[in-house]
Length: 224
Image 1: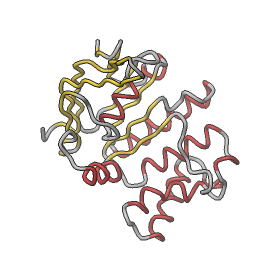
Image 2: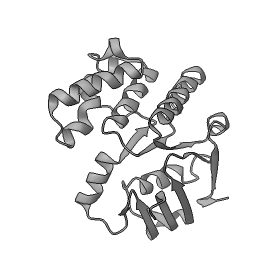
Image 3: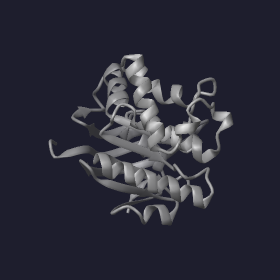
Image 4: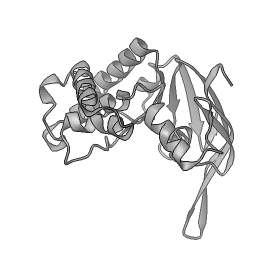
């Protein structure tokens, strides 16, 4: 396991909707090395988001086992999972998930505050990251004052706050126009290269997937 950042073996996941049981993932296995860039491609409903949530410790599989950064996710306690998510993994979501009452700088600082980083140190790092993603002049703006592309840049800076080893991006261009989406993908690739961070992007967009050296195709809950 030492050569792999992430390993999922025979993952299965189902949900119960009323009286119906929906099987989302079936016997999915995936191995990811340190520094890899992988596109997880599939149509809506193929299981991409579910798989990302499982890989990042946001949910637990019904069957199978997952290791991430040396932690056995399927056996870890809630506190161990919370620590892993905070310091080892950066999440980027299609809907941004910024806190509306906080400005851009404060949103980026949230992971550092959870990790009990000195507030002054966290603020300086947030300012550096916002400048790096092109928002140096927008640090005091709240989410409703920012465009969709700007909000996604804030979300990227937030994901990088604690210098994670793994970035999980779930349809990061899904709410953006094609030009802005292209800029966001360019930025993610550039930041990943600079830091040698492992990057997994879940997308239904063939153009986005084509940017990755490795593409994993999910069809009806299975890797093809």
